Length: 199
Image 1: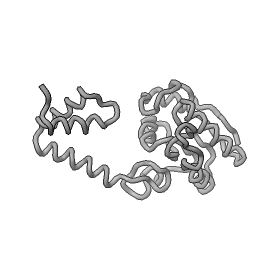
Image 2: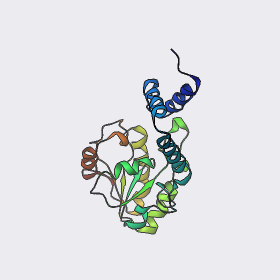
Image 3: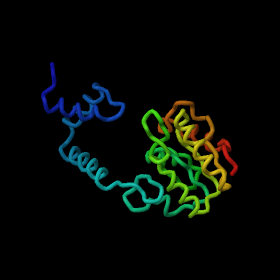
Image 4: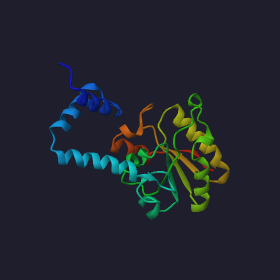
């Protein structure tokens, strides 16, 4: 028997979420329908609040509800870990032994998607490095073709500046997104990072 139209609309909304198929979306929809109204209102309020209050940090480009995020406000700029997307910061923060800053590129180089150096936050990275006196840049882009190409491009840019550029080790499997790597794997990859440019 087919679900009623409001349920099908709710299922369709849940299916828009990444990795959610019909069965999972249907489970979510039934859960919402069976929940107390206060719980559903709280869920709706939290979704709207996150959407309207969260913005990009003016320094690193990560997610925050302030102009400058807590990490940029409280840490030294001696080391900057470069990631592709804002969500990658929370993944890397699971590694307890990293105390440097982050820089979000806003993607990776991808000729197939017409995304070149000018489409990424590379100029902002260079500006921050000079302003902060950064000594090491850790490239933590995904271990795939685009991530590797981006890491090598930035390493070549930084080489004349005398900045040490390292790449997280391949404890993270080729083709794996950072968000799916566990804490131990990421920690080992960070510890065993490899120099790709000594400056």
